[in-house]
Structures are given as C-alpha cells and as structure tokens.
Amino acid sequence: MVQLFKILNSAAIEIEKPADAVWVNLVPPFKDEEFQELSKTLDIPIEFLRDSLDIDERPRYEVEDEVRFIVIKTPAENNSFNDSDAYYITIPICIILTRHQIITVNSFDNDAIKKFLGTFQKRNPDKRNIMVLKIFEKVVQNFMDFLKEINNRRNTYEQKLYDSNRNEELLTLMRIQKSLLYFVTALRSNELLMIKLERTNFLSLNDDEREILNDLIVETSQALEMANIYTNILSSTLDAFASIISNNLNNVMKRLTSITIILSFPSLVASIYGMNVAIPYANAPHAFYTPVILSIVVSVIIAWYFMKKKWF
Image (cartoon, rainbow, N blue to C red):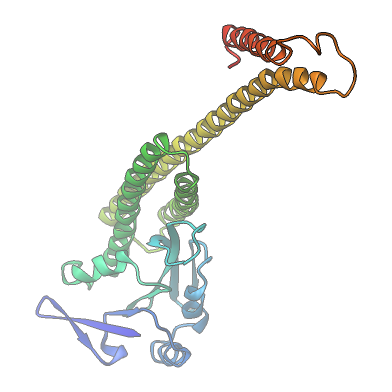
C-alpha cells in the first residue's frame, strides 16, 4: 500500500498523485506493480524499493543517479507462532531521498513510522534532512522503549524462576536473550551507520543538523550499552541457574544413592536368610525376628553416619 502526503496550511494531508507528494510511505502489503510505477514516476532505481523486502538487510547507505538510499534497523514484535523464537526482532526501514521527495519503505508495520506519521506536520517537511533525523530519533526511542519492556519481562520471569522448577521460565528467558542479541546487533550497525553519515556528511547537513545527528549517535550508544548490560545480566543469570540446577541434581542423586545403600543391607540379610541351605540359628525360636532387627539396627547406623557426614 502506498501512502502519499503533502503539506497544506501547516497540516499533512493525504493525496493521490505521487509527483505532488512531499513524503511517500510504503507499507505492507506490497505489489510489484506499485514498485514499478513508483520507480518510473519518481525516477528511483527499483532495486532500492525491493531491497526493503529483505528482513536481513543491514544498515547502510549509497547513492545512485543523485538518489540517496539509507537503511536503518528498528525493533518490532515477532509475530511468529514458534514458541522458541525471540519475542522481538529488528526490521529494516529504507529511506530514499530524491530531489523533491522523501520515500520510506517498511517491510513490516513498525512504531517508528507510526509515531513519525502522527507528528509529520510538525517536522518541517520542507527540510528533508530534519525528517530523516527525526525518523532516526523515533527508531532510537523505540529501542529504548523495547529495552525497558524486555528488562521488566526479565525481572518478572526471573522471580518466577526462583519459585518454580519448571522449564517454561527458562525457555522464556532464552527467548528474551535472543531478542537482546537482535537488538545489540542492530544497534551496533545503526551506530556505525550514523557515525559514517556524520563523518562523510552524506546528507549535506548544516551545523545545527550535525549537532542533532551527534546527539542521536550518543543516544544510540546509550541504547547499545543498555542492551549489552541486559544481555550480560541475563547470561549471568542463566549461567547461575544452570549451576544451581546442576548442584540440585547432584544433591538429589547423592540422597538417592544414600537411600539405596541404606536399603541394600536389609536386602542382603534377607537374601542370605532366604537361601535353601542350612544356616546358623535357622531352627531357633526367634529366627525371623533376628535378621529383621539386625537389618533395622544396621540401617539406622548407616543412616546416622550419612547424616553426620551431611550426605543425606
């Protein structure tokens, strides 16, 4: 679907002609005919439009025939039905700058563009560089919001893991860990992209715009540091719980082994007195009670010894 916007009387209105649009926003579902028509109408290389469909597209920028192309990653909820997949993934936003328009292409619905759309008329649409930087700003804010949500989830499921012996909480924490790995990779790539944009001045920014970009680089670095911290905390937590589980398993096995040893002596006595051969005191009046009492006494002594050594 193609959304076309133009500013009229300081308000964003949706129009139908691409040539008159200030901002062209492409959102799913996509049609190849729309790509071909926009490519011809706006004189854009069709590869720039199709590259946005690749969810694994890395943040980068390039220029072809005076058309500038930027890819940046933004977080999004994962709608996969697989219980082992990450809760959140990162998807590309493609920004295309022509002489008169700014075109954004989204492989999935994402909050960054929705937030930008809500305040579009306040973003100086005649200043395309400011619009690009504001999209970057919304992306960074989205990362911050998702990281806070991930941290809250992590705390909740860690507390549940303390009070539970089930595997569901561990699997949930693993899904959160996968989400953090996606975020760390995307944030590192976004940071490198912004640094290159600032160093090469790809967008031909003025001093005020360069200052905004520098602030965004700092905020992206902070988000990356947060993601790294949460990842390290979660990894340490999972390692600690793995050690606790292993230690608990060793204790259980030690108790079971002690019980087996304690019960083995009565079984040994009963086996000896159950043989079909002549044995001492076989005809005594209390031949049944003697091995029973002996087994109990020896078992109690062995149990006392194990408890003294804290093996049981």
